[in-house]
Amino acid sequence: MLFKSKDKSGSSIDYIIVGLGNPGRQYEGTRHNCGFEAVDRLAEKYNCDMKKIRFKSLTGECRINGAKCLLVKPSTYMNLSGEAVVQAMNFYKAVPSQVIIIFDDISLDVGRMRIRMKGSDGGHNGMKNIIYLTGDDNFPRIKLGVGKKPHPDYDLKDWVLGRFSSNDAKTMSGIYDNAVEAVELMVQDKASDAMQKFN
Image (cartoon, rainbow, N blue to C red):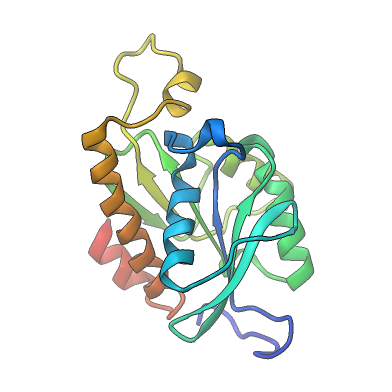
């Protein structure tokens, strides 16, 4: 494990898995909601009911390879994601190394994935807010490639809030499965194996 859980029973958890996105049906399937999609895939695999509203989020609990995990989809908008993360961390007295964040990355081609154990926000508004509110950038993160803007003058907001082509959507379905596998390794303290396999 990346850390020692104080108590395996009761309300303690081993990892908080946060998928970033925007709430609301109008944002479903957009590039910016890849984190939500990956967490949904995790929830589906582990029969995790993501209906409990707390920490300004939709949450659910499940065990992933023996680790007790809290799955989180913030109900704030992307640029306020840190509010949800801070509330969950404070409740569980969690440190950044316990919080795995999954989000979209325009610097990676569609279908590419990159795992990092810490680092800057990379220009991502969700990560920017999380780092700002926690004062820490030591969050393990899984970045899902959504491709760069088609040309420099294309509005970035329009791009990340746009939807994938049918072919790219099929490709992304595979990357969500890869993200699930990466989480499965990371909660077993096998982040280096995940990085070697998917980076």
